[in-house]
Length: 408
Image 1 (tube, rainbow, N blue to C red):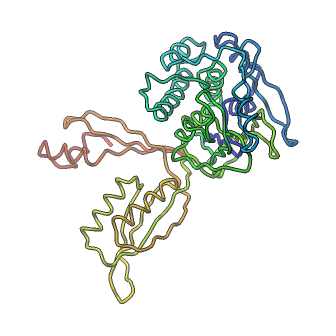
Image 2 (cartoon, helix red, strand yellow; image 1 turned 180 degrees about the horizontal axis):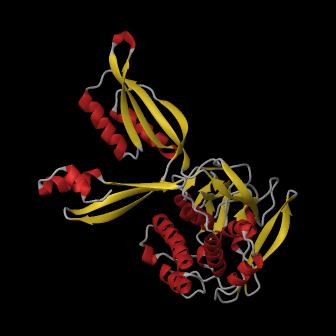
Image 3 (cartoon, rainbow, N blue to C red; image 1 turned 90 degrees about the vertical axis):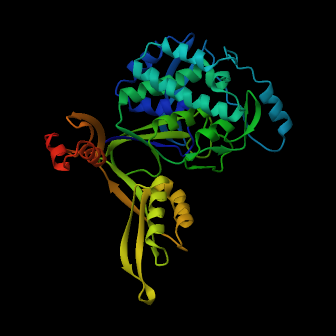
């Protein structure tokens, strides 16, 4: 499967992600020309090769009327007076419209010279940003004013990433845990902790950490783009890498300030899962059944029991629960809540799955949902049992008669 893996060891920002993806593009000049013909007034996108800590990569600059935005990190907790005063006096120098609403963003993106898919993706990213701002400020989405992320350069970053995702066309996007930085950042509402509240909301349930570098490493724009495109966050999967791109940030640290992306092939349907298990010898069958139902409701992929012989010659059951790794703690809590176990075992496994699709087939007995699994050069289709059973009961026929009309 064609896979894009994003490394966020130094956080993520819109321009860094755009630069890293641009480094993978076979014809950078064509992409930059497309970015400069979007129809955003006064916006110009350029790219140049630069190095951080001896590592060569690509840096993207987005200017509006020839002027680029500056960072407003508050870098120290001592000597704050002059640092804060400097942040307050920043003059961005171009059209920073602070009264931009989601409807304005929709109108602007709707008129851009890009495909419908790029427009839909860009609006999806802004939908996440609007939801985050709504949560942070306690206002309806319609009343949210975009500040930094509503500027023309931010729109160019977001649309640029969406355009590059369309051009590169990965079948899946995976992402590492995200370094958010530390300290404080100056924004339209004042000086806020890192990660900024909107960024923290966008990265909920995502593995994040704070390294030794002070400053905002993950911006709200970067967080929204990762949230929108990444299907899973975690370690790098086993993959055959065909190309690697480095997107350089504007700041300098002791470590290379870059966002790295890898494009390559992974085994189709490969992922890591957690297998949680425990032995039970003091629960009734009804209680075990109820616990299984609750674990499925909590998001388990599969739950099953195996008869086992336990100490003191007691018959018992081995309860096994399979879940995605990011759900392991939540599922473990549910096992403790609904069983009598005092401890769990976790085994991390690699799982291979086929892709799955669902369709509906009309039959003389009514509509029947069909499940198709495919990949690795083959496919197979089977009906949804619940639909077949329901049709058989309603029409007073056997399951075999319903299946015969499906021509399987």
